[in-house]
Length: 445
Ligand SMILES: [Cu+2]
Image 1: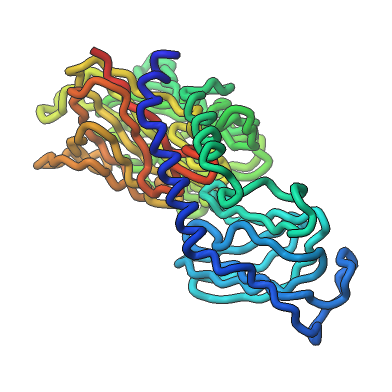
Image 2: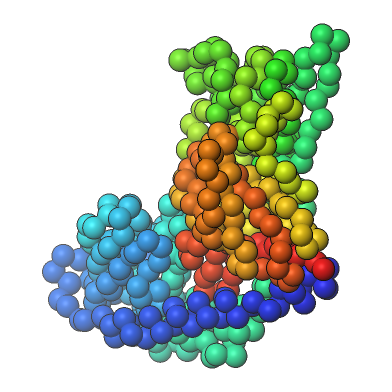
């Protein structure tokens, strides 16, 4: 894959540039070190701290998604009052490494206390995905020198910033264990029914090199197996639940009978651990669809219980022609910001020959919007939620909201390696360079 990297090296400057912007912002906005000695009138006893009352005040401002300042110096260990200003639009918290949590709804402020030990302490936002998105920081004791939390961008030289960014990007596409979204061929029954068996279980999933996380998976992969069939097919999905919790499967975007819709109580009982449930119906509408858990979905889907369900119509007259047909399943949450279950540099590039037409089926199974931006070539938007658009149109940044599927056609006209990433920049770039929702389109001559 050396050749891939050589192409890709051409745009490694993107990460450095963004980190440079962060550094500049930190220098401009960094409002000194807001540590002011105050009498400890409202002190509570903190056994871990050498002093009995707050030594001063630390102000941490949260935004979507980061902390300002992210690196805080205090003069000595001890208890500090923390003023947590949430300038973001959604709930954030500051969770210190000792378990102290101070949270606030959007545009609100909360106050608490934290005992900073002599070695300093890191903090993050505990809302799933936010730490990966950049909401991390640390408090260091100024007098203690080099010990303490990892260095932050303010403390790194330009050469270090360049090298840290390059160290990640040069691994692309990095090897990791497991590959999701693999096509699962159905077992064709004697009556013609296409049958798939999906077993939900807890697995360990490597999202980036060395980053192994607990995940929920169908058939041991995240995303689950890709199902493909045609309009008019009779299909059967047997769900086996080997999770320690109930689950169900909802077929997202498909016409189904109400008792096959996968919503607990409304359409079926929840499928308990050790139980199975069979979904069976005839496919009535083509398009890029999905299947996913509909039980405590805010946890189970980000944890990995999701997959692509692509239905084609052999009689369609308006179907765009494509040489390469690929799905890009977007997710965010406990597994980080991922494309097809992996974060950069473990994402897979799309490789095409010049002149080939590529169909990308975006599917957003996450909790956040992801505007997917391709460098070098426009994207022709041809379908939304499985429905072909009467008038396709070009975009260079295609917004994919949670639950949406957007199909695009890319004419691979420009030879080279082109960055392909979510343009919520905190989903794609951070203090250590590019990560998360970044991949590349490589067009070969
Ligand atoms: Cu995004």
